[in-house]
Every structure is written in C-alpha cells, then in structure tokens.
Length: 100
Image (tube, rainbow, N blue to C red; front, side, top):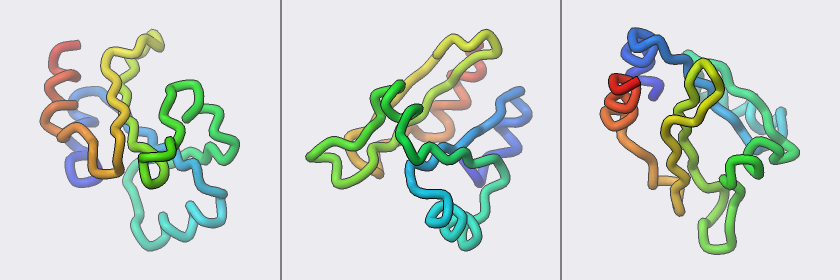
C-alpha cells in the first residue's frame, strides 16, 4: 500500500495502519520502514479483537487484516488472512474503491 498510496488518495481513501505491538517496538520498525500514512498503536488489541483479526494458534503471529470503511463507518470490504502473506492485492482494494 505504501507504493500505491497516491493511487489510494486519488480514490479519496485514507490508509491507517494499526500495529498490535508496543509503541516502542512499532516506532523502531517505522523508523526503519517509514510509511506515508499514519500508524495507530493497538497494544491492548481492542481494534484487532473488534474486527476478529487477533492472532490464532496456527497463524504464526498476528494475522493480517484489511478493511475498507466508508465515510459513514460502514465496512464495505473486509479480509482477514490466516498468515502474514495472505493480503489482498492493491489492485483488488482499488477496485473495491472504484465500486463505491
């Protein structure tokens, strides 16, 4: 999403990353891998739990999740992967935005 951020913005979308790691660990990662969009810290896993994206025994860590939420707060698209590499392509997400 970092590489196609301008395309997302052109669709009127804003990207928010959410990290379930402690702030110090997230900050260290973001210094090494800066993102052009905000990253929110969810150390208590409130957001992850609300969207059922919490890690599971067989997920080898935090499961990746991606949601498109419209301006009214309605989830228009949701995908929670089983493993870190199970994420929708940017093209798939941009097509969801095209349909809104």
